[in-house]
Length: 237
Image 1 (cartoon, rainbow, N blue to C red):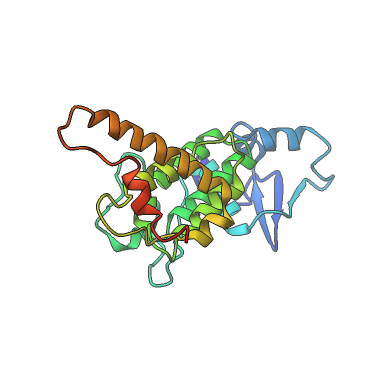
Image 2: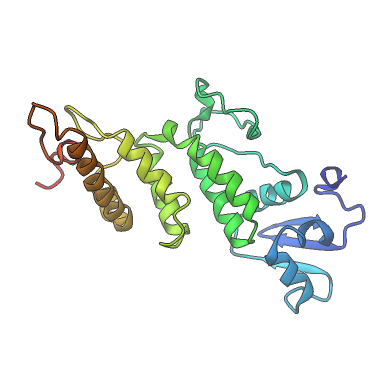
């Protein structure tokens, strides 16, 4: 029943204004899933007209937050101009990894993770985290990755490791292991997001220590920090 009420004024007892858009809503649907709306509707935050005004968020992401509250899912849009908008798939249906249209979606999921945190919707954070983890690999490209990193680190606090750990894990797993250097971010990107640089350095050190321990019994002498050396080659000139 709640699905049919999404963006419907039927039985609506709440109006939410976000940016230049107005959304009809239903307290009984929002308040039971979001601590933010529960407090807003029970306190003085809501106007006498029954309207909540949200000025600091973008309507495109708020619309999808509402859609999640009513349907249990949201529709992702990508940042690749050549790729069409496609529905986010459900957790029971893996993302079609071979499809080129998955490029550019991870930053949208990072925005939705932020929405889940802002409105205190735990299930939305978990859904967005899952989508993010299954889409970031396809954004290991200079056109997308720096913006993804910046969004993740600027929209989450240090103790919220949900997306940050996924970013670092993805980079570590795809560091060059023989020759060459990283092509999807550079030293300027590291300077712009120092927390990412610190996390990456620590993770790289830990990763190489683990490799050293695994190769300790090998007859071939291993080179400490080899992956880190190749990854950052030419950056410290």
